[in-house]
Amino acid sequence: MDSTLLFILLGLLAGGTGGFFFASTKFKKESEDANKKAAKIIADAEQHARDVEKHVHENEKRALAIAEDARKEAAKNHEKAEKIIAEARADEKEIKQKLEISEKRLVEKESNLDKKVENLEKQKTDLVGKEEEVEKLKTEAEKIRDEEKKKLEEVAKLSKEEAKQLLLAKVEKDSEEELVKKIKEGEAKAKLEADKKANKIIAQAIQRLSQEATSESTVTLVTLPDDGLKGRIIGREGRNITAFEMATGVDVIVDDTPGAVLISGFDLLRRYVAKTSLEKLIADGRIHPARIEEVVKKTEEDAQKLMQEWGEQLVVETGVISLPPNLMKLIGRLRFRTSYGQNVLKHSAESAWLGAAIASELGADVKTVKTACLLHDIGKAVDHEIEGPHAIIGANILRKFKMSEEIIHAVEAHHEDVPIESMTDIIVQVADAISASRPGARRESLDAYIKRLEELENISKNFAGVSNAYAIQAGREVRVIVKPDEINDLAAHKLAKDISNKIESEMTYPGQIKVNVIRETRAEELAK
Image 1: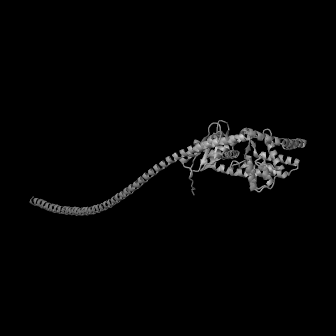
Image 2 (image 1 turned 180 degrees about the horizontal axis):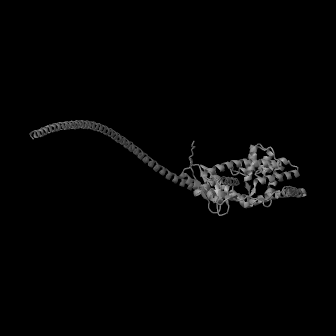
């Protein structure tokens, strides 16, 4: 029992000692761990404090640098402000000086104007006095003349009218017998064979030549494969039709006519170019302003080649060979010219055949006559570009091509602009008259209408800065294209007014004529 208790006590003592040692060891370890953590926290805190201090120091340095930069910038701005103020004061001083000089000049000009006004008043007074003096002298001269006239009548015992009648009666009496004698001799001689021979020659010449009666219109019809093309021809906001009319100089009429549009214009060449160009555009399908200008330009070049071909063909048909190429081109150009509705190219060929027939009957030089008849209206190819009668213009053209003087004179004399001298002159005049006077050959109203439109264009083209001019709307409007580098917007308005004033003063026309001046500037560059 005692030993058991003793063992229990010893066990308790050993357990308590072991527990003490265990607890002491654990406490010591935890204490060391806590000390380490505390030391680490303190070290971290000290490091953080050092970092904060360093950051604060850097911020202070940065703040000082910013403050220094701001001070320098303020100094620069101050200098600039002072410089601007100084320049402004200098400009103010300069402007003030200029104003003083201008004011001084204005005062001087005003003084000079006052002096000029005084001089003009003085001159006016002097002129009034001189005018009165001239009237006085005129009255005295009239009086002296009347007195001299009375003295002369008293001396001659005749009045002015009586003296005039006496002189005319004497001249008439002296010339009457001689004139009657010459007239009777001429009539007797002419009546022997003239009528019979002339009728025979003309009848034979006309019989040998049979030509159709033709007339030219001022409207050309272009057939459309589809009515929907009318919208494309007009274009958005009318841009296509406007570009086409400006490029060709004609008026395009798009109305309710099914499957067709009308091209109106008095110039046959322009209508041909417009019709051919429109047909090409319709066939191609691309209809826009740039393409329109390209096609029109190409068609104009083709028309020049076509005129050359027509001239060469007519020369071959009539047998007039050895003409210069440029002259044959002018002959072909007559295809686009009419005279009183008669096509001038056909009229020239007709005259050549008639002239050759008459020359062969009269024994004249057939080749010379035929050449002169073919070329007698060559001046009409360019008479819208050169002032003067077409016969004189044609003669001048033939002189440049060194044609024979007999042919040149026949061309120059066929409308008696110069006196008729030879048989060739007479035959050319007769052949021209026969071709022009046959039934259906000519229509006077159309030619007068065309001449009025040509005159309208020529008046507009004679002004400086005008690039081109087109008469449209049957002569109710003239469209004037100006050079934008020579005519500004203000000058364009003045030009329209000047053209309208000149048209009013120089032309006779029904109704009103609208003058439309167009100034267009284009900028082009090539993208490569």
